[in-house]
Image: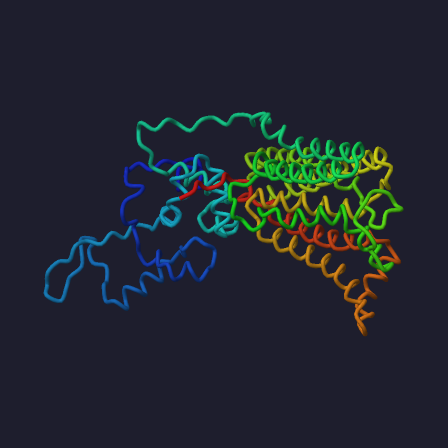
Length: 441
């Protein structure tokens, strides 16, 4: 760790034993002391006084530098008393991370995920985690026939496959809406059924590829069930709630304000069309964050530069969704202002962005909570028709009187989106969120 370049200069070890079976251990390398720190390093430095106290307790005084005398008078083998290498001990603790890394940034992201901070790196005589990762990467032994690490290349252009997949849900939804307006009777019902199935499959395909895709298909946030409910509520929920409060519904859902169960198509069409800007802004965030990770020299510096980027990308998506809502409302002759749809779009975008970066638990929980809240609001209105249960509908009735039927999705989706935004500013500003996914074992 020392040399003419200072303590932060990464150096390659002079001996070939960087991965020897047992690293040099002494009293300074006891894991119990490092575990007490809770910093994920498993190392705690020990002073010379502590080693002297250990020698006194064990009765092994240092004699003449050639060895120790046993009680039988024989000379014991010499014990090496060289200074412990804390970086080497850390490398052995994170051996798989060091061997798998193709770049010092991968090691820095992995150390941060294990709880190593810039303050922890200072105990290894480095100014930050990035400098510590550079030395660890330089000291990893490599075979002579292994080619050198390739120079960083610019980010690849957007692939045509996922770009077309993100446009497919909106195109199929627009075709379905056109078919509904041009047909009637059984033909209309067939068009609706086929259109819903086609849009659902297109959404599933769009969320499996590209910036919004995730390699873990079993992740809680990867399930589309909650998304289908929320989109279905945007289509049918407001009309059902308003007619239920008036004593209905008295018939099946249909288009137009005079229908016994009015359907709002503009929000759903805008949300499906918004799949494309959601994927494009997510890719913009991923590419810019990776570049800033390469240029940063500390975890706090990286978080400070990525947080405004995240908020800017989020605002850019909301702007695109607002424009699509206004366009769809004008074309379909429906109200252009949908606060509940904006809140729903923000919730779905943040949930998918977190899931794509391997933070799927919080999105799954909040999406499920939002679905439960909307279902409870509808159920309370119908349950209030039972004798003695009229008070159950008072909260929903009051909210609808103040904000209209769109107040329920605006409140439920808005609260969940705000919680996910706060969560995203904590999770997506970490270096480990932008590290390459680990290969399956």
